[in-house]
Image (cartoon, rainbow, N blue to C red; front, top):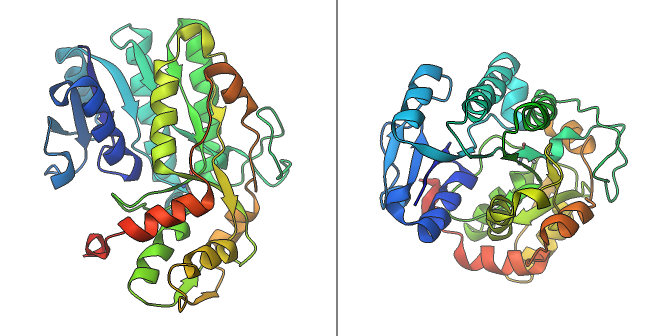
Length: 316
Ligand code: AKB
């Protein structure tokens, strides 16, 4: 079995991706790598490496020495955090990608997954059913870095035959680990407050619709894209991917079906402008056609699962 590494393994996507890949490929073949000194409890079932993606020589040596052939590069600053630290966000989001793309060009690595985001779109993009190919003028540092990254992925594929694959993730909803620093994070935070019986103050307006997806769908999409035959992966920038779309008000009302006393109020902050520049819903027909993507979870299904599984101990 070829060796796989997930860099940024302790984050919201990384934790669940490592667990799923270990189930599929055998725990010993999937290395979790992250900045943290110690491996979190959830990832202790397999190898762990403390790794700073900005330490290029360490990353190169580790991947070459351990004959790692598949890389999932998830380490990044998300939209809200990136606005507070633009220089570092640009450095982290771009330099790590170049390190891995170069290893692909030198044929040390066979396959790369690098996540893009709906943040590649901007205020001039059509917001309803946003097409795969459309105007892309992102207004956030995060969005600019993701759009630049997409162009570099396509370039390395076209010029150097690097097998790099990517998805424009919408907001991801999960209960195994907490999100950090995104504009869509409210849609996870709200469940913790609801379960603590605390009123939730949302940093977006009640009618801010954004594309979202349950984590199980996102992990399945990632693995299905990576497993797809090379010839089926026709888009080497990143695929649009759709799960469901909802507003804070719609989400709160779904939660009230389980917790009738749950209260929400709205105090929009700087994240409102980011949400306003992003799509409300996504056209993912290319992913459906090229590698047979289909989502499994609707808003009401994901709310039911979240209400039953969110454990407020995670906040401690
Ligand atoms: C964010 O809100 O920054 C992320 C994303 C949509 O990429 N969740």
